[in-house]
Length: 378
Ligand code: ACO
Image (cartoon, rainbow, N blue to C red):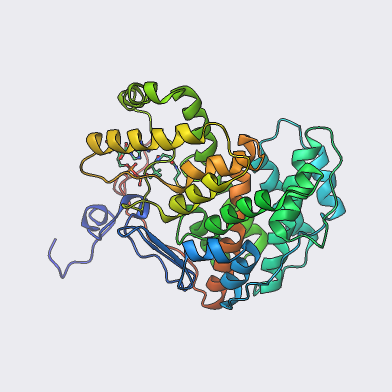
């Protein structure tokens, strides 16, 4: 075919030579003022502020407000909100074997059905869903154990309130602070898969509850949000530092992935892992396997560097999320849903950003099926 010929259906598939990157790796699919993930240098900023500084001097509520409004107001507070009656009834109707991520996704979807969420989405809508979801997850976690849900205490800020509603008693300040730090590092992270989902849903002018429910579904996958509980499982299998090298090499020989290592964007050490390691080491009630984790990390980094000299595989956020989450008293099956609670701030900030300068997200796809043909006769 020459350049002057119009491609027809027979030649078009072969003629479509536009670049395609599997997994959209390295593709710019939007613009954001919310965060920058610098994978080469291992740096993360939210609206310009370094993640390490935000962990040390901020709180989740202040960070959420920063993401939504662009304003740094360190005293900003965001208490959890009560669960609407119909949503509570739905949570009560779920089987006790329901996975917490499924319960949270269902709760957000049902919450959306009880709200008036007109377009365009607002900061108030973002606040409302972000402060509803911790109550819903805490209620489900209690209901499945046959306990009554605990009403929100408006005097508590979001993370402390979540722990209170989960346990039925106020957490000690160190515990609340450690989980708050986890929420800060989990709040936002560029165009990860769940945030991209939020952008796509919002671009259709759908509502904020649909966007967050879709994001929870995306985050449910083990390649995105499921790793910290698997970190705990893997460390239990490793057992001791003497056994670590042999176990890790065996896992790689079997084609398994080491949980808590590797990242699509980071080629350097994940700055969120560095911040959470500090938090984990400073915790009063650290899990007894934290020391083992620190030792296993060194061995894993050495073995991964040997196996994959072509691709830098470093520690990711999930590795040190595991001891923090376990240290504050969460069971591993609550880890992914707790990560989702933290990411509400970023998801909803992306809803606001997308709606503020919206264009329907509708990329193209290269057709690789059979050329146009006649149906077989007979
Ligand atoms: N352990 C062993 N090998 C790994 C690991 C790992 N953790 N991560 C990547 N590799 C290997 C892959 O096997 C692949 O080698 P191959 O081409 O010979 O198969 C190579 O490194 C490149 O890996 P990709 O799959 O291209 O990396 P990708 O960017 O798609 O994946 C991911 C990133 C999913 C995080 C991956 O590193 C992984 O599975 N890690 C373990 C799970 C995990 O920790 N997830 C949490 C991520 S952080 C987050 O979502 C908040």
